[in-house]
Length: 505
Ligand SMILES: [Zn+2]
Image (spheres, rainbow, N blue to C red):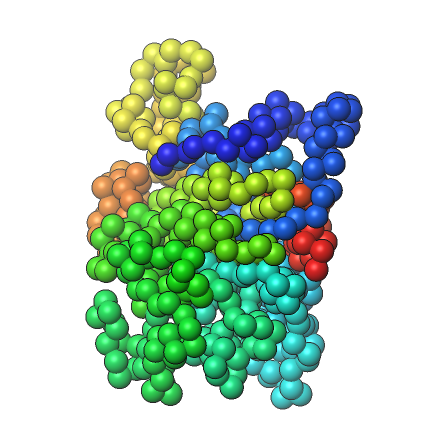
């Protein structure tokens, strides 16, 4: 993955690297820098890009760093000049879902899990039967009302909870057929808060735009029960519709407004993307294209939401490999945006909606090439490790002999550094088995070739069909005007307030 450099961006990253661990102190002590940076940071932002790594908890960022650039390396996320901790609980759950958290981040109102665009007085599916409360206003709607262009990109279905919370209102996140209508300017259910409409929509989820009697461009049957073909209706409303890599490659500002639906359901995991039937763009490609189009065509500025939706799905499937590759791709997409924007006028924020029960466990030794001392002996599995040893079983140094030895559990069975608290990776009644001889079916049903195989399903303590989210804080990373406000620990609703303030909405 190539990482080019925006000079403006490099300036920030160098200073953040130098001051790491004492950033606030360093800025305060360095008056000229603080003044220059502060002046730039306090200026109003013309544009804002809000990146959401769905399910990208801090342990996912750490594991991705080791997997991708090495434990001493720096992801784009690591180079953000300002960071904070964001609390993710919803009005009714300690551990949240994406509907509640994205509504909070888009509207500034903490609400119930499962609910999109309504406040805490709205129960999921209105189970009390007392009707919904007033609909909330999103930062996307406010930006549109001020004449800015607005875009929504996701590798999940574009009608899925996170993207939907930018533009729709529903007391049930799974009402995706209905959610799609709220983005269609000519429909009776259209969300009038979107004005002339969302200028750019790209992602998966074609199934909720295609009738359940019709086979789509990649051979999948639609899911709409009302017989309507929204692909045609969006085009009648002025949208350019594309569905594959070839169509994506032709897009330019002349095609606005744009609807790109690249998959029947969610887009492919980045690891599997090249096997896609019709061909589909990467998240990095979608972001670069969108930012180029918006930069060139929005004199009043723009708001763009970008979701990496499948970090979450890979974790739910207990497959760390795909979660890490999608996080690496998310990081590359942020880098692509940072290269294309002017950070003097564009606020860029990246965060997660919630974490996952994903752990870096034991005391795994770093690879031999990274150790400050030679080792007396080592198992072949240790010597052959890839990806900074993060996917491997745990090895440790024996301080008496200077040799590397396998770390094992109480029953002398080795275990991997990456583990899940629950999920499909539970090994069943037979108990734990050595990951190197484990024949448990991995992601996609194949028998994995050890714990570093892309199909390997990490072990889980509690058997569940789907691994769950986790309740601890997630990080917020920020660049550009007003990003210095991103500090300390606070509720995720602060994301809305910061963007509203920065954009003068
Ligand atoms: Zn999830």
